[in-house]
Length: 239
Image 1 (cartoon, rainbow, N blue to C red):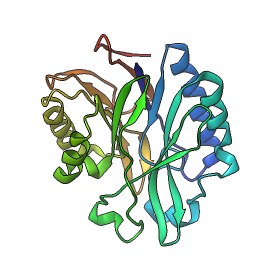
Image 2 (cartoon, rainbow, N blue to C red):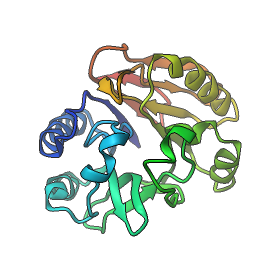
Image 3 (cartoon, rainbow, N blue to C red):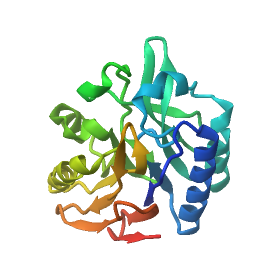
């Protein structure tokens, strides 16, 4: 299974523009053989907690339909981030678009303390099976939570993917943590954004670690791009 990490620069608050970017990126990844494409935390709005309540959507929002149509057309899984409305408030979600299936909602369960005033805790999904490969997910802060990883690990995923919105100060700790996770024999991947977010700058550096904890590849801090990882050959490359 070929898994793509899409490092983009979201347009703050502009869901329509970001959907178009997602489509262009997905088409590039599919042309390189991707079976699944994962985007950064809140990739469809930008990471903007102060705007979350205003930007939050229903899962069946018509602006998201092009992503489902793309999934259906190319038989590809797309995981994109957006705040989702709940009865209690906005939830940080990674929406999973699967061919000819209902959209699934991976909700961020473990919130960073800075997020607790803006968001409500969501419900994690079990690992998603893509062409027989079980993909376990984490959203940003969750990768640092021991309880979260132990729960994911107990479900026997084949690969671990963290969708994040990290500034420069958060990159090194995240890379260290993911290398440690990978040394358990579980390949680990991280996808970040670039550009302005929440009064800071997302610092890119999306990367892939093999099951020995060795970093195979990394994108720059200030460039958009796509990384691919083949779970069979265990090779990684830039598109």
